Image 1 (cartoon, rainbow, N blue to C red):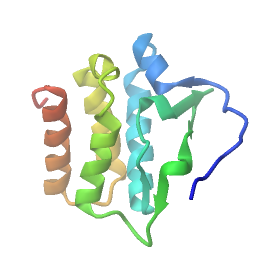
Image 2: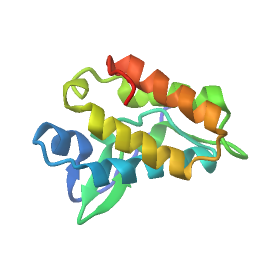
Image 3: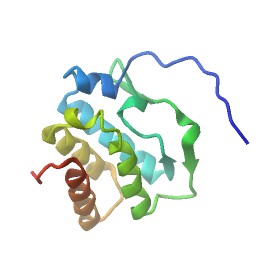
Image 4: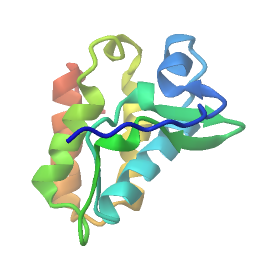
Length: 137
């Protein structure tokens, strides 16, 4: 079965556009990390999670391309979260713009809002930095 969605585009710029134009700051990346953690806590697996599918408009964040979203009964498992981070980082076009200081803020926002033990948060952070070729801060 196929699903088709017809919708009006959300106004604003994608996180990808803001990163590419140097207009994504640490505060924005922190807030994106918080949103990702909240999705994971609520059991939302968004397989199309990447900077091109996050819209920023007047400081508000929105998600697009949501047909590839799954809803689980509770908080996502740790391994599912790690896989979702792979989805976020998989687009090579984004990697040059994901500077270490922005990734640090993204991960700090995630850590502040996630329901994971410190050891798992450290593992996620290390995993994300390794995938991007960044050394730990």
